[in-house]
Length: 523
Image (cartoon, rainbow, N blue to C red):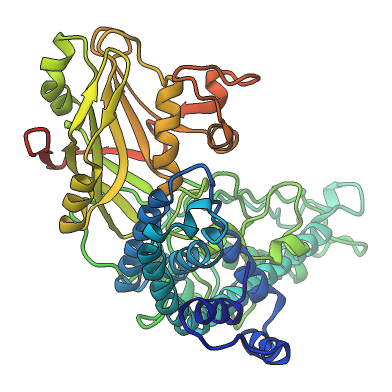
């Protein structure tokens, strides 16, 4: 991944006649792009971010397809910037710049005269994108530095908690046989405590209680009081043993934490969470499983923790809380608006499939396929299908091909719509993805990883399905396939290896209105 200084030099080299900077100047510029004193945590956070910005270009795909992909990236970047989501804005600008500067440079069509206006537009926008990234980068560095401080505070609290537990266990361990003379000791038993905090919904109550007790939760304060009683035996007992405290072993303290972490709050000028209103309120991401934590016992003068960190940074059973990996940034910490698989939520109107089936009914009766394009918008890091576009097309019983794609682009550009997938019928076949369907959908998923393919098979059971290529291996296999036959197998791979159903995954069915635009009658 190129640094910002290298990207700026590449943009200037492609858009002006000025010579490239000498090597010493390039080295100085690159060094200036890495601020002095940047910690390993912050540097690793940028590395994780840049890793997501990688763009793969298939030289066999038309260059115009990548022009559309770049346009989609640009639109997303501007939306995220308007919503002050600095992480995703930076990511989309970087993807756009990577695609424009290096991704398409070796494409065989990049030398054609007809492609030069499109490439010139990409380079000009890339210059703006680099400037945007240079503005956002210091804000990201501050954000990652705050994450590091919260991360270290969480690790320290867990270390103190383990130390207190160990001390309680030592003080409560019997050192002499239990006898009648020692029976006068007060029996000390710590009831197992279960702490369950619903992510987001109880944050305000938890904060208020946390500060009321000086940083201690109710269970943590009770542990401290019992520890003090253990260290100070009652003076009313005259028959107490001189060799130690006799009492039962302390019951283990159990804890249960939420598996969903709410987004980390940021100041308005740097926040990635200052979103505008959304027309549809749906969950932004699925639960992140696999996290657990122990009851936190903070120091007497604590630093108030972020509500999200106790869920995000909880340790698994085989990982010590203060191990090196626990002190490193995670995908969930950096990309708080996405699901664990990296996909953003896609809201699909519940009645869209049945509406499309009614539109396709005349063709279905003639045993002809019908296809449509799913278009929509991006808001608060979630996509929503707002328009069902029926393009001009030609069809057979087992195929459907769009025509006059310029008209499709014209409609999408005028309404600022993103392409989110497609839908088509199988009039007499079952509900599955044929090899033709796989290759068709590959172009959609390259342009938009969240893109879906809906198959309607009204004469079969099941009658409909929502699919996407597996990644890996499906997307790589189909992208690399050069078989010229319309219908063909992909040797060594079963159908389940290449595509998968996504209902219940990143796709959420919602009750929402949508527009239908039928272009088949337009000339």
